[in-house]
Length: 287
Image (cartoon, rainbow, N blue to C red):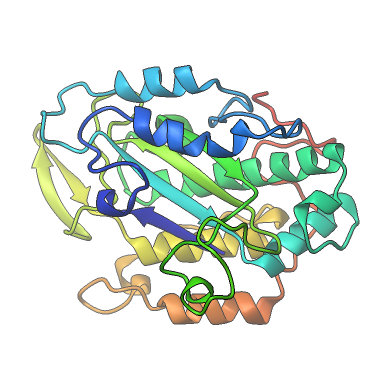
């Protein structure tokens, strides 16, 4: 499982994130332009279906006290490997498939629903990772996600360079992934949360109180991977202490290479316990 915070320069159709999010929302709607009856719109921490106009209104109105040159939102992505996607599909449907279209419409909807709930877990961990008093879970954030089922080749891909594929061609296999648009401000518009902050583990004084600054990317990546592998057992993985995080500079002991190897070795064993907010019958508590 690979989760990522995208820098504005690498965010599709967005030259920067200091204005409105309309261009990004419209870019993320690209798959819905095709006739896919199973495909729905955005989701939030509490709702399974949120129309694009609501996404733009909520994100673009959550700018209190932010200056013109401040970041207003960020894009995150949640990316299961093909093996992880296959395992998730098998646990949800009982089928072993190599293409998402091999599932029925009802099965596709169930898989998308499950991936939404896992994404909500990732956003709980995202909120916790800032270590702010008012930001304890995804409920304290303003964010919207969208599940996508396809990827397409780009000019930079080796397959295109070698003439094996054309730019724009659909990539084969299971390509499930999730894009998240999250506001810089929390839901109260009193806490600014930047996953791009360079200072990690240090404290600044704000309104007479010491608050931690920064975002530990490697810790978030690791905990999201652990949540996918182990979290369905209901185990809550606590934040690491400074000592557990690593050396005196606060570096994470488990770098990306170790995370990747652990994912490959683990085989993505998912016990039959629901993800975030989902009952045993499979319905999300907020839907």
